[in-house]
Length: 219
Length: 219
DNA sequence: TCAAAAGTGTTTCTTTTACACCCATGC
DNA sequence: GCATGGGTGTAAAAGAAACACTTTTGA
Image (cartoon, rainbow over all chains, first blue to last red; front, top):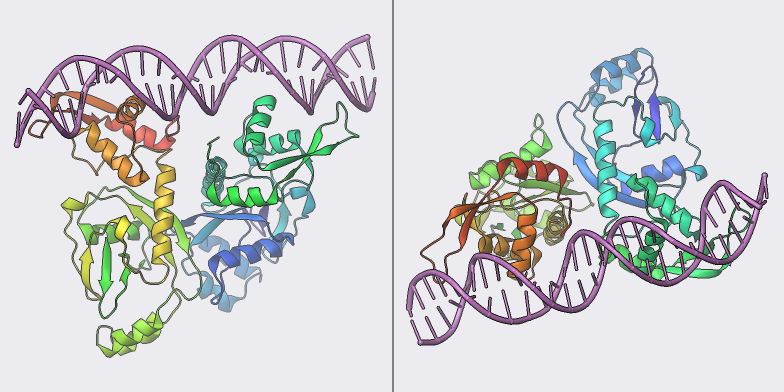
């Protein structure tokens, strides 16, 4: 999800400020909920970005000139900022992006067609993605991103999207089942073209357990 | 490396503050150098700790009463703090820990016998260790922790220490060699009891390359 | 000369990868 | 009926784990 700043050709990641009396992880969760309306989402901190000059004073001037930001706030916005990067996984079709006072566009954008981004946001995206790909080797994935009942092809497509590569249908299934976090139902997903695939659910207890401990086997 | 705070029975991790005009990663590097005198050390950020109440006001009062901290600084020290955790790997025999104005002891302490620690420092240590163990699967390790020329048993002991488990001597050697980042020299380390092991050096170029890309094979 | 540690290679087991065949569904 | 995708199993390759024997060294 990216925002296009008013009067700028560059986009930015959605973010927010940490309040004085708010845990940082909690702030991330709050911002996520403000943006998406969703709770209980996979959300994972991956890095603090703390280089100097993480501030766009040219853009700030424009915003003040255009009355987007009040002039008396200029000094505050001129301060140095650090960013804590979090990855959240959201089923994008459930969330309709909405703009805020600083932005005139807010959209879901594919990683393959990223527009120009402000500051180091491109780097933040890259590190977040890499981090997620690596963590995929240690923890399960899919809750909140899939319907409660889902098919093996749906789960596989999710992994393929994040890993950015095709996975063998049969080997993927064998591996996923070996983790023991899936329950196969007696139902099938009918209505699609072609043969109806079985439906699965996550075994909630084992899923949570694995989430804590990480897969014993790697990807 | 732990510090024992004056007038307290609890120990703490060495740390410092980030200056206003200093990149966060750079601050970590500075603090490390101040503590150890060493440069070019493996240093890796693993997490920001940003919960509330990461401050010990009881201890602060004591410090002011004992004139360790000037009373006019009390308000400043009462602020909320966040901590960015970094792991550095240091050959401890090369560094003699020294105290500072807030501490009366500074020692290298084994992970197996950790004393009581302030605040969430125990959690920070645990997360740092886990993080390091996981990263070991993606990157090489040993530079700066071993002499320029080192033996396979020395390298293995290093891995065993960090992973907290015994590794098979022969399988370890085969795996390490397969990464192609080691050069075996014609010399051997003589003088020890028992058969003299061969000396190795890291292939600097391949080491750096692997550091960026991660091992293609996992641990 | 003996215990301890290092050098080297092989066998076994497990995991991963590649691949083949049959079944169901919509057009 | 046929193209497409799903269900299942098996053979081959690669990798990890277990293990045996020989060599070297200081005590």
